[in-house]
Image 1 (cartoon, rainbow, N blue to C red):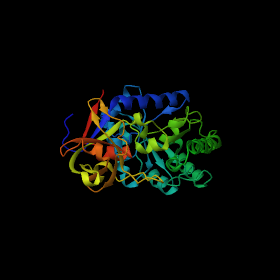
Image 2 (image 1 turned 60 degrees about the vertical axis):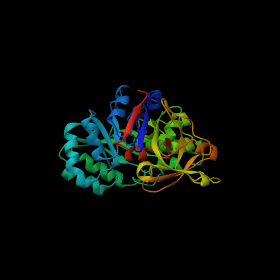
Image 3 (image 1 turned 135 degrees about the horizontal axis):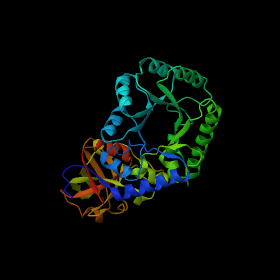
Image 4 (image 1 turned 90 degrees about the vertical axis):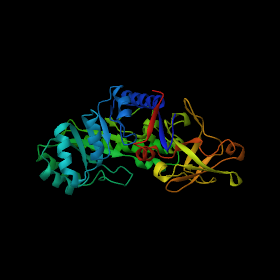
Length: 356
């Protein structure tokens, strides 16, 4: 492979296997599979889902929705609290495709009721424990929002939606599974409360760690995992995947070798890898694992090698001396990213596909 600058290498075979496993979980649990495309953000990877007859997707912004409309997707949920400053763009999208958006306040719903000109679906975002956005399950504002939606024929109540981002700080697989069960209980109670008046409502759940660890997704009407398509070092440490499930690596040119301190410097910094890191209790914090790139992809992580520091363009790799001596300036080395969503976003215009 010809590499001149930091480049995201995407193993389509691994990504396809990851999709197949998650799709099977959704089917076995009787859930709609609406994968979140914020991780890959690529029409090329979207094709892997189309090949598996996936027809509904999730995105995290209006611009991302527009991009995937251009790539042939026509059933989209924007799983981010509605940005009222983009209401005109949202109306335009809703005139072209089946669009769902999120509200989490009466204020937003009220302005939407006035400014919406197209039919669109509305999910009410529920805070099921992550405490980032959403209404608590017993919040009286839910009823007020529903009354408002009932008065506007363009705003169709689709159901309740949650994201269990608190799984990322869980300390065990059992805690991750427990968080998923808490979400299931919370959302189903809401569904049962309102289903007589809204017989077609669904409950929609998103989160890669718990969906990966679950045998299936029974109890949810829809699942929206996203990171699973690539996985990453964070997911590996959580226990969501094996190291061989990680479907992306960042290829970085070596620009300096400092044997006296067992360090390589790479052209691959925070603007390529992000500054996400893992800080184990008894080991130094690190910003990525190191692999050797091959014609088929990459090796297992090199034992004892890791990205130890990042600045804007520079990355510093710590490595055992015997391994370090294999590299000279001009060589290419691979980094498994801590957070593939961020690395993929940073390198959206600079990627290579392998193993199609």
